[in-house]
Length: 272
Image (cartoon, rainbow, N blue to C red; front, side, top):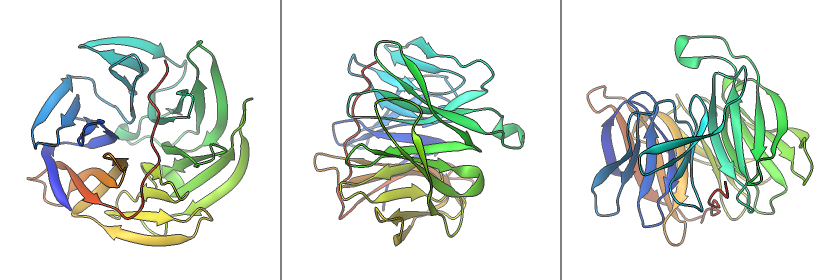
């Protein structure tokens, strides 16, 4: 794996920048950052903390989670969703229509609070907000199968990935546990074109790929002591970026990249 960026506190939410690089957040240190393919790193948006999910927008700029869900562009923030009773919004993805699917938090993880189950919401460009699922102890990584019919959600608190049948109407139909992590936690996830589900294993410091049937296919060790998330990127979607925290406290949070033999699914820009 090649080191892309370092010196952050808790890098998260990597996304393909469309030009061979990666955009990511620093949950604790704040900001949205971009590591370019030429090795340079720039700050796209300052200060905002708690970003567990990022999506590019069709209108330009980015969707960013945190205490609420906002559209970020040219240094400005526009609130898109602010849930009553939620402590924040975490990871997210989009479907083929550009609708945003995001998980809510009902407790404060960094204050040591015990998990309170949250929900998964789907937001459309016409302003419609639908609850797709509930009862997820700690909603984290979110992905969709290649056929668009299955939603995968990491439940970090119990180290499993839950599956739901998606349809035009809400809620989604629970399908039970898709897979359980043999070690660590289930944090950020991404889906490849063969239907494989890749997940960051948090404290295990590694990545895991499950087949579309939920069977462990491979484990990939990383230089990180804690892995937060991952994404596919590049023209052929075979480049993977990984975010996390080094075992060496002097190195802090880092971003790595490597080439995969499985192309990932493209993630549509948000239509909101």
